[in-house]
Image (cartoon, rainbow, N blue to C red; front, side, top):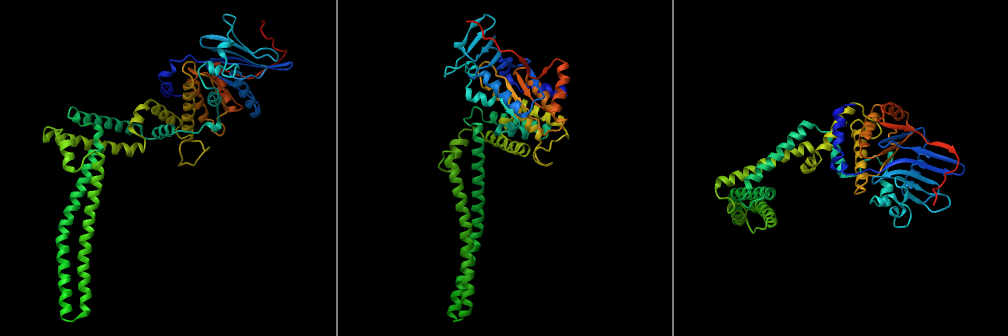
Length: 455
């Protein structure tokens, strides 16, 4: 795994990741009659393997219920808010939350609106939203927002050309701001100024064309009319109609060019109205000429407008519909996704689309990272854990480790639990477990009922 990629991925956590104290699952215990199922969790990444689809479904459901639920027999040990807590839900008796450090009952601090134990509410999260968000399945790994789609698009472009063009656009924006500073003209005026100038130029061109054609059309119409009158006086009715057609052609030609002038004038009036001006002359006086002291300054401003327009045109050719501001705000994420895309290289997954379609693995990576961000955004303080339910089915054996490395890096600040039956995932986890980066485990079943705390 390329360490540069991992370093970039770490940046994706953003500043919010360093400001939260994550909720850490420590141990889940489920009592069922005389048998007890238990699972222990690594503070970062835990992989629970060798589970069938139905078992994974049941285990993830019980784990979520342990955080906020009332089913008897589901007990949980968790680290939250800087305290070690144990949630007891005995078959008979009151459900309780115990601070194991001080051996104190803190149930009242962890009750939801319905009076049941709710660690989501205690962390400041909506229960229904949290239950949906903290579980990630294969069906969820689809970019579901315009933001994700834009990042994925930018990640697949030539990064050198992308960021060089972005820098040129920013430089053009700065020059435009300097050209308009202190003169009452804002850089935001550039598009409307450009459009007004373009509309006025179109009107001038249409008017010039009309003036040239009008004399020709008048001559044609006059010749045709006089010819028709002459043929009528000579009683040569056969030639009257052709001369009338010539006269009609002259009239139609003049009307057509006149209509072009009217259309251009109407377009100019519409854009002037948007700028709050009655006509082009008043616009220049109020919005440009009166604001710029000299003709040199006016030319400098219009040159800056043109440079900015050309730079933004180049940006559109590179980035498509993605706004420049979005790209600059998400530069770290785009660069990380681009490095991931490069790391995957020619190893494309055929899960969706053909060879000409988007890189599916890169899209999956974006979706995973988006879900991690969504989990972190659930709470103002303690980041909740993310439960990943066997999401890599159908991907090739080369792509899976790249995505798993990304998960492992995210687990530095958000606890992640992966439940799986995927042999490729388990092989990767075995190697990482030997290095101490994660815990590879499975549910343990023992005999004996769980004793509730006294009191």
